Each structure stands twice: as C-alpha cells, then as structure tokens.
Image (tube, rainbow, N blue to C red; front, top):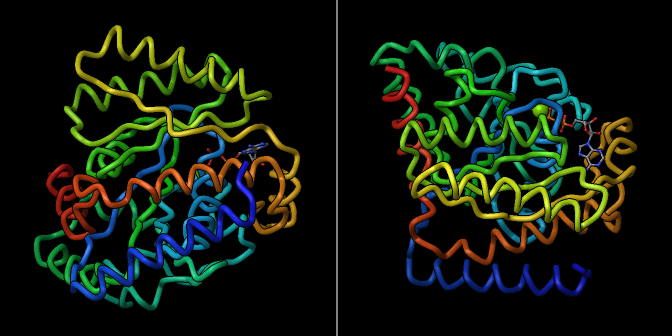
Length: 296
Ligand SMILES: Nc1ncnc2c1ncn2[C@@H]1O[C@H](COP(=O)(O)OP(=O)(O)O)[C@@H](O)[C@H]1O
Ligand SMILES: [Mg+2]
C-alpha cells in the first residue's frame, strides 16, 4: 500500500537525483511515453492524467499531449476549454508556450485538437519551425505522456511507434484483451523497438487483474517472436473514478486515498524508479522527428 510517507520518500529521492544532475550539469532528455489501447473506453485518458499528477507529486516535470480526438478528453475531465491547440502552432499563429495549459500540481497540457491530423502533411519548412518551437520544451520536462485515441489508425500508430515506451491499457473484458493483443501484434509487425508495458484497468480484484495480464503475456510470448510484454501494474475498478469524472476533477485529487488513487501512486513510483535507465529517454525532438519520418 502506498502511504503518505512512501510518497514523501519517493519525492525526496527524486529531488536528490535532480540536485545531483544539476550539480554535474547532466541534462536528461524527456522520456516519451504513449498511452494506447486496442479498444476505446478502457480508461486511457483518466490513467494518463492521474499518472501525470502523481508523477508531478513525486517531483517530476510532466507534459501531457492530448492526442485523443474522442469525446472524453483531458480538458473535459479537468473542466477546462482550451482556446488554442496544436493546429495554431503548426500554422504559426501561436507559439507552443501560448497553447500550453497549466493543470493540477503544475503539470502542463498541450491540447492536440485537429492539429493532430495536420501533423500528417506538413511541408518541410513547417516541420522545421515546429521542431524548433518544440525544442524549447526539451529541458523543461522530464516526461511527455501522450494520450491517444483507441485503435490502430495510421495516426495513432505513428504516435505510438515513435515513442520510447508504450503503455497499453486493457480491461479484463475479452474484447478488450483481444484488441490489446491486436495492437501489440501491429507494433511487432512494424518492428517497434521500445518497451511495451501493460496496465490492467477496471479489474474487480487483484487476482482478476493478474490473470488478465498473464493471459495476454502468454499469448504474446507464444505468437510474437522476441516480443516482451511487461506488466506495469493495475488500477482496480473503483466508484471514485466516475464520481470524480462527473465533478470534472482528477480522481487522484478528488479522493487521494481511494483504491484507484493508491494504484496510480504505486505505478508512478515504479516508473520513477527506473527513470535512471538511459535507454528510456530519447527526447522530444527525436520523438517528433521519428513521427514525421513515419508519416512520410
Ligand atoms: N479504474 C476505474 N474504475 C472505474 N471506472 C473507471 C476506471 N477507469 C476509467 N473508468 C471509467 O471509464 C470511462 C472511460 O474512461 P476514459 O479514461 O475516458 O477511457 P478512454 O480514454 O480509454 O476512452 C470513464 O467514464 C471513467 O469514469
Ligand atoms: Mg480517452
């Protein structure tokens, strides 16, 4: 169980690492994580937002890109309505700093809006300008979390393939597991070289969550050669989640001691504790460069 003391210890540890990095002048690239799923409505947006808030509580600087064009977006959960989005940056009307929204615990949110689609056919000079704007964010953020829409459209796939790590969210429902497998298979087919990790959401018990994770792991091991699926953790089904969503508040802040919040804190600790692993972070510029080469 993650207690207040555990959380303070995690924060202290992270601040110490940061202080050491500052002393040695070491600049760490932003760690880019895409949150994806095969099926919609499995809890990606809630997971991404609350994970971001927990990481920020642990002293990490978090940027979230809302790349989901679905209905329940991050701005809806936060009860805000962004005036500008990525499209305004691409067209040159706004600077990236002008569209970023400050969220709880100092997390920053980039509303993707229809700009997400426009990214697909940028001219070379527009691309250069966009990358230049983005590079300003490189040293200001430890994490970029990307909340994608469901499924394996080309758009979602490219956002996913370019990331250092992919977190796949599934529920214990057979259709959700099958679709998660479909997504992993597609990533494998496209020779994704990063880490694929699984989050089981909305299981009724720990046992159900574990069985769900194992089932998927077995199928991946059997049918996808050299593909490794790590189980990152689970968030149990919890009434505190829809209750907070109705209030347009992240559940972690609405009810920090709820079961789902405890689960999120646990996952956030796990992520922080492997953040020193150099192979994870390639940085924002490299990430967007990869996206553009995939779209070509
Ligand atoms: N752990 C959970 N327990 C209970 N309900 C949840 C949980 N996670 C998500 N939900 C509910 O599931 C619905 C879909 O969540 P959302 O984050 O919008 O999914 P997605 O982004 O994958 O479409 C929301 O109404 C939310 O309240
Ligand atoms: Mg969503």
